[in-house]
Image (cartoon, rainbow, N blue to C red):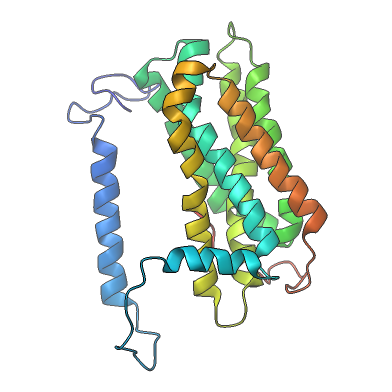
Length: 268
């Protein structure tokens, strides 16, 4: 899907107008439509508007610190930070791994990620909803984080002479990934104090952005100084540590243990 005129696994040819910038245009259009929908269809929820406040450039940092100090959110945010950090390392360097170890071209790498995206969408739309009826979010996270880390390591078990094996990992990898993303968001929302779910979700968004910093800073050094597989090992270790931390430290003190009681929505 990244190069025009190239066949997508024999199903269709990528349109001639499609290029490297096309996904960014699609993202921009969707973001604009989302803004229009928010402005035109969502009612104002603030009953008493406050006009005397000032913009605080460090407010997001203060919110993150406040979140990590909160007994309700601390453990979940720490696990979420490690998961987001590990997943960012994975997405940043996996394309390099495919190129170096399996000689994937740019178009073939794009096609591979397109399949991963389709499976993630299926996981979010179908699997997450079915699991939510049987298991509460924090119980799902107790195994999904470890499953995610293990599936990343499975990529190293695929021989370079058998690239087809990379596709066999996709269903389980995307299943655990979808379960982790959706249930992490749900648990953050449910763990927040009543009436402060929006603030908690904002803090989690800031934590996710903060987790992307290490990979962004190290990308140049890693691509020139170490092998492409080492960042993927770091990704697996980060997510496994997040799972271990969550398993040992999280106590369902502030949330219900009844399946289907979570208030969060799937994370896309």
